Length: 493
Image 1 (cartoon, one colour):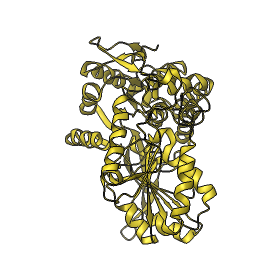
Image 2: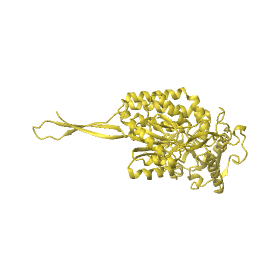
Image 3: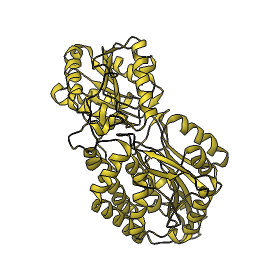
Image 4: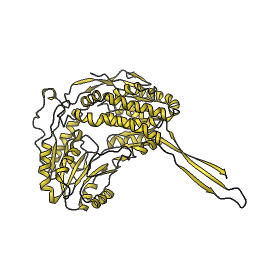
């Protein structure tokens, strides 16, 4: 049982109104504890604390900021097993996944931006100035200052709670800002644990503040607060659209990492023995609850009949079970409501003429007694759908994928780009020239060639179309959390 508290001005506090929300374990549907049901007054207190902390923190030498970030990374490493267990229980994901992906990545985020802040360069330009005959020679030197914004809002989703929250906090505070964070109310525990680690690492009070609660009562007043200078949001496209509309009148900086309906494109010259395990991984990691998952799989027609049964057999072999069992590969979905949404799309696919290649997901599941009431949904593979149908076009965000044959390179590009989303794509081929052609023509912010989810923290992360605006990662993140100021000075030589 974990009773989560807000973290404001370096202190753990209840919501000002005393209201709470229940936190439910997805794998068992049991009560895990409570979280604050925060409102505008809690947001105001958090922003005030961040504003008070900003002058001193922004003036703190970069090397001192970096030491604190590196210390946070060390503490996350120290508590890896406990944090992995918390993340697994709170989200329903397999503990084996949290142990190798979520928690190490959180540490890596802090460690990376500790170093990036130290080595970030500034631009300078030397300008020759015209001079009259006999006058001294003159030049101007322009140099760019990158200065922190002030108080920034960081709103993170439920699917990768500490992974994505740390991805926002680390560059925000490394570049001298203070922040107010609003984690998802569905998965609050590791944000609560992270607050304690930040304090233990020596982060001054008020630099990071965490307000728990719903988007309507806590997120909305945070977005419109007049002292919040920028908003970094990861989540659903509809919510991102609302945030953009609310923030636009105040000209706040926005970074919106939104939904995805990502294509996996497999050509006949790709080796199936290595492609199939990676296509399964791309489709079903974290029960398909990753914005980068490849949920639309396009296979060259000449190998489709060989690919489909082998892929389906590999999916059937995935082990669905208790997230705390090290052997589990698929855990529970995050909530009963989300499970119902995923199940509804299977029925939509059937109505649209899709054929299920996997067992009926409504059949009883073989689960341990502890998990009988949990929010589990088995993996589903569907074929025979038109590319324009709802199942192919709408983000399901669960363990449901579609298989579709294509006839040519241009056909594959047409199918892949027939989407309102444009976050990521993966291409599997042994033809390097073809891979480059597709990378240039696919409407996506990120393209993987013969791999999936290979992440380098230096590179930009983000999408096009309804998948968002702006980029996170590396220098893009540091640029987002700072304003540029050009300084021009004239010299006579």
